[in-house]
Image (cartoon, rainbow, N blue to C red; front, side):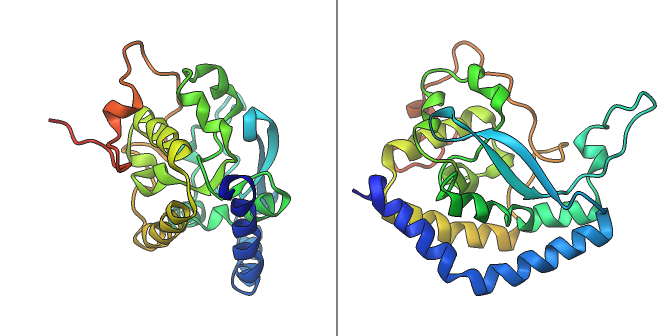
Length: 221
């Protein structure tokens, strides 16, 4: 029942009741991005949602438009601006995704919406992350976000899909607030965000070998 209807009720209730908190902040950040980075203020990109169906994702722009001598955009690490770095560290760049939640493209909690080109790179187990709506935050985010490997993140997503519940979603939301305040796990070492997922090599452990029954990552022996 929760997965079919309760989750949507939770999303709408939380987002609508907190409008007085996030709407002024969204406006302030939009003005700040416009003044410091110019236009466009929003970064939009097509991402895969429920069952891999594409939708338009909205975020605040955090990268400059710097290019190399041939006119190609520089790597993210070279285009991230101080404003963008602060927005990412505080997760304020994610605020426009509340519109995606209101539209029903996303949920408050679920596997993060990744890139369309990743779809054929998932193995059968990893692909199950698309059996639920993508989320503003998720179990993988509160267990390490960009500071853990792709195989670990996707295993955590699979565990969430198999164990989602109201209690788990509320737990993730509470932990997310703490993680955001402490700015934990925002970037991977040496990267502006996370390296591109190129697919898991043959012999990658199944989720049960990476994630304990309680949903936490297993520690190397």
